Amino acid sequence: MAGNSDPLTPRAKIAVTAGKAVAAASRAAGRGSGSVIGGRVALKLDPDLLARLAQNLDVILVSATNGKTTTTRLIAEALRAAGPVVSNALGANMPAGITSALAGSSDARYGVIEVDEKYLAGVARDTAPKCIALLNLSRDQLDRAAETRMLAENWREGLAGSKAVVVANCDDPLVVWAASSSPNVIWVAAGQMWKDDAWSCPSCGGVMQRPGDDWYCAECGFRRPTPSWALSGEHVLDPHGSAWPIHLQLPGRANKANAASSAAVAAVFGVPPQVALERMYQVQAVAGRYDVVQFMQRDLRLLLAKNPAGWLETFSLIDPPPAPVILSVNARGADGTDTSWLWDVDYTRLTGHPIFVIGDRKLDLAVRLEVANQHFQVCENIDQAVQMCPPGRIEVIANYTAFQDLRRHVGN
Image (cartoon, helix red, strand yellow):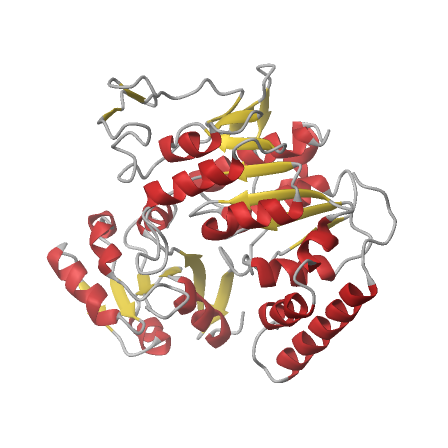
């Protein structure tokens, strides 16, 4: 870690103060947390501010298409065993939001930072991270994000020769391709449920062979590396072969995978797996994800799913039929305005569930469900959907802005 001398120049201090004032004004006006606008103002006043704020921190960057907010939270919780942590816990994961988060703490030892996939290379240049966690890459926000192979190539070029320890999921060929340019990689067998973006070899374009959990390209020899950490059922296996039990309050296989990667990151900084995993149990929800709230005398579990891979993982953890399910899809700027990804989701997994559809793009979703031969009802809003739901806990699955709308409406 760098020394504890103040890295901020007078200009940087003015930028931080101005950013905080703008963020406070945004909050007072009821326009959200203010972290993004505050960060933009601060960076306008001092374009080097992010690098200055990171100088005295051991920085850990976390990037992925799915699971980065949760994994960031789990890593932050684990590293608090070793010292104070600053983190962009609410998921503002582009440079402005990251700058705001780091400006909010002057005594932290670790900076655990979630980074949008498109910005990873640039943020890594600015923050000189000690560790970078790469979890997965799959199709998302098709109108905004590059095709997944291009993103993997950008990661690969941006991380080439990085001094950071890269903790990477060896079960995702795109992640392996991206991480392989780094000299110091720790491979984690975290699994990959969604495989539809990884059937062609990122190295040569050949068809990937995928027997069981293994994968390889018969044409160029690109293949799954041997992991030193692994998710095995309800345990994390460390490099010595010891099995450590995972006890999480967060549901689902995907969160066990997030915990395995988080334990590997924590170990880089000397936090033993047992201590790291015990601390992760404290996390009950992440920015509203997985929360169970009471609304109109009913229990609603709020689940975020933003893209085909996320919906697939979410379907695996909901209560079995006949549990009612409310689906909400928007297509605003933060979601991506292209809803063609709905056709990549296997909605037959909802067979047997009473389904209720809401959101800005409820009719797009209704057409997709009709083609999937699902029984559903289109509703005007969450209130009407809840009134129509049969008994039982209601599973509410929404994409990004639809999820934020729901949280505000149900009082969470």
